[in-house]
Length: 312
Image (cartoon, rainbow, N blue to C red; front, side, top):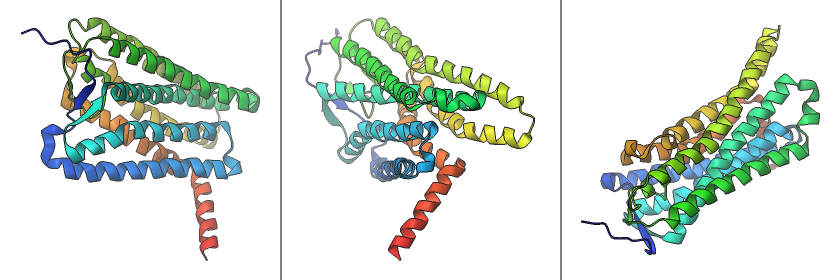
């Protein structure tokens, strides 16, 4: 039987977690709690940095941008997941699906390049400390952030336009949002060009910034090992450890999702991976930076003492 061309369809169906329908209420409570907690954690991080003059440095400027990206990134996906868990299989318009894919890619790719910009910041701070304030001036920092958003826009538009110009031979997306891989499953005919497109763009969006991060850290580690004082070495490593943890979490899940061919796609596995980088990683980012950073913890304690003083 030849599949019907449904390219003119106006709506898709998101299956979500239909295979574990009996756990929907539990999943709703867990995800809703994580969503609120993540929003609060990232908002508190951004507000603490904005409200403390001692944290108005390039490193914390990038961290504020990371918190804002995580809030937006999460809000593109989670509300639809919660709706799905409440009512079961739900519909999403073709336009809504395209917009969700675009913004998911936009914020995700922007975060990839922002992490590379943060690695460059640490590279300059450790390898060229005397020239740090000159190199990482306000104009450079804002240009780097603008560049991350430009890369996100390009990748989001390329993927979304090419995917939604192709004819669909299915309406049911076996996922909880309009992810690329399950949408490829619905395309008519030979999808190899689309698969190659996904991998090529993923190489640009994931591998390129990751190589920049690796390059930066090779020089960072080389410079730190030349420091004679073990105390100064430890301090230098501590300024990079939080960023390295965040990079490992984000790139580990993203690369396992996109840098592989379609034949290895598994709906259940990919749903789990998607949850890890759409829900768990944005929550862990501010926790990692706050718990491992003395300056942020100090600013948080100062703000808490000020609030207690006001309340009394």
